[in-house]
Length: 259
Figure 1 (cartoon, one colour):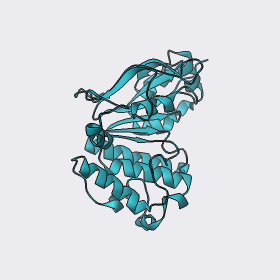
Figure 2 (cartoon, helix red, strand yellow):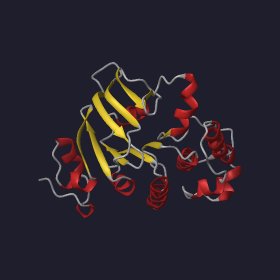
Figure 3 (cartoon, one colour):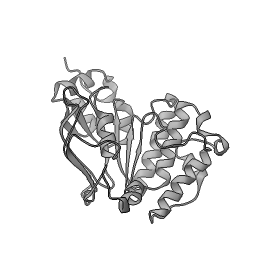
Figure 4 (cartoon, one colour):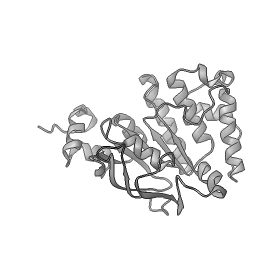
């Protein structure tokens, strides 16, 4: 992982919904240039952690900071800066997007937000859409008329258009046709590598994590229980949850039989 200065730091993060804690003391650091996967079965708290990291939810205990600025309770004068530097794309692809606006307006909004925050961006909507495999004919479509997969792709294009320092993706391509998923993931990875964007991808899809990330954190029982390069982690799992994930992966992917 990158040795550059830390940007996003989560310290002793706890969260829950009235019952046992979903997150129980999670620590996490994401730096520019990192490409980190958050791996775990459905329901272990991956989306909750992404929501907290992105500032959409406050932890019950602990804190998340972006270069020392609290995320989730950011001072008013720093909110534009934090929003431009830290972007989140949720699984439904609709959070923060006005479905009555066109695709072109939606992407242009990201360029405008970035410039208002003092960041330099292009104004090339066609190039932004090309990263997620969408032809220029989509620019006149209203977001509300798009399919689930198309909405996810527009949400990613919108987030990347601002050239953030950090990008958080929560199950980002679940609604995208499997035949296109790998190609789009490759284009996203090429762009974040070229721009030095720190990337965190939360998913239970090991193939997607293998394409997008270089290092994974396994989330289970409210904590990070294992970490390392994905194929190494699956080849020699140390935690029962990781072993269960490895058993579900074809041997051709690199995991070894665990029985």
